[in-house]
Image (cartoon, rainbow, N blue to C red; front, side):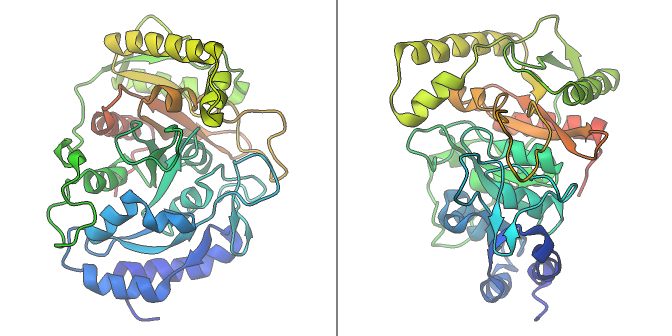
Length: 374
């Protein structure tokens, strides 16, 4: 294979590791090597990245990354046909496996994107999140995942529940994504497909916040049953953040109404008075919370990664889909591991529109918990 710089090395890793991981549906070596040559003088300098699913290359985020000098190397796996659950993936070589536990699913629906990042095949990968589809695989693969504020970027979903997102090695790497898709990568080419977009006025540089951050910790959001070991690991992570002076817990919790009925009603387009009331009441409670503290902390999922035969009656989305309804940006940071070797995610939620600030908060959290750096 021709050198191709970073893109060439990424393609070599994919060729070596993907037959066992099944993270990719398609790989594009010829295109990637040609793009790498073109991108050398652009801001991202040929940084290889992956896109979610076959349609991901047409997404707004992918187009922005390409215009800034990113090189797409392939399309990652998403759930295939045959089951109603979305926490798995089907790649070109078979079912997508969790890099930490091959007998477990990586989560989904941005399954292959999370695996490609966790296995260091690429630095970052695009995703989309309609109920937790970025944050769940980020948590279960032990990487960073961000769901942006609803409406900040074009939604791939008619209901508006799905938001663009990114899977990355860390919040620092995710900042590269957000800076480019919001317009912070300076002029690239004359035919930039997103030139003139109004989101270019959004600040794009994440700064470390003043510490400690006032924060609310809610292990179950008032309605979810959480695996005791998962809750224990997240509690321990929060205690470490308090001990390190990163957060200061305020003396209150967050109790929401179970959003399941409201999410399903919005998704189906058949809302009801009961669903509308759930959504309205949760919005009021979250508005009150963020008026007092800039950060909400929860487990990302109530459960650990399940086997490839499915989650049974569990809803892995129990702690994530509330924020697809409310529109708040939310991220998952690795909190630790269960005794059987499964990563556990800590979910960080911030006020609507505070995506850049959330990345700064996540960097501070990562410094205290896992000290990930480029």
